[in-house]
Length: 133
Image (cartoon, rainbow, N blue to C red; front, side, top):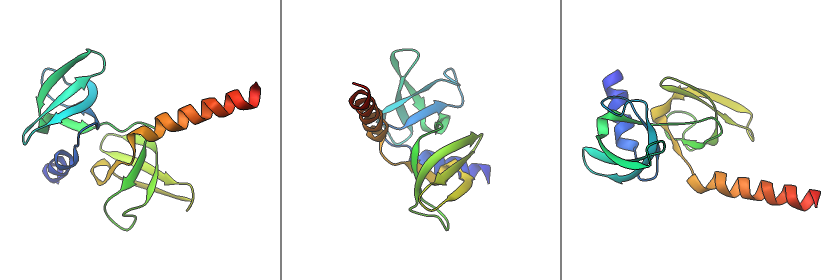
């Protein structure tokens, strides 16, 4: 089962995904995929300010609290929600509109919109400024 999950996780890694290196010299480092080959990815490592090439099998998508994701498997497929908990290989996704919370393997969700958080933060800042000035 773990081998299947590992293969699924590798398949879904795309350009601009946030990933964590899970094996090798760069284990534990987090970065953004800037290039993807058949068996290798180039990762812009956040803390190193450099791009490292690593085997595709050595990275996993790195979800964080607050990430907006879409479920792509099972009875909740196509539902969009927010990551509210991350534990090893599982994530908890909440859909506020429907009031549902789903715990599932992280290989069955993907990022919805990387720029969403930036737009939300910018809008919240603008709203704050508008209200308080």
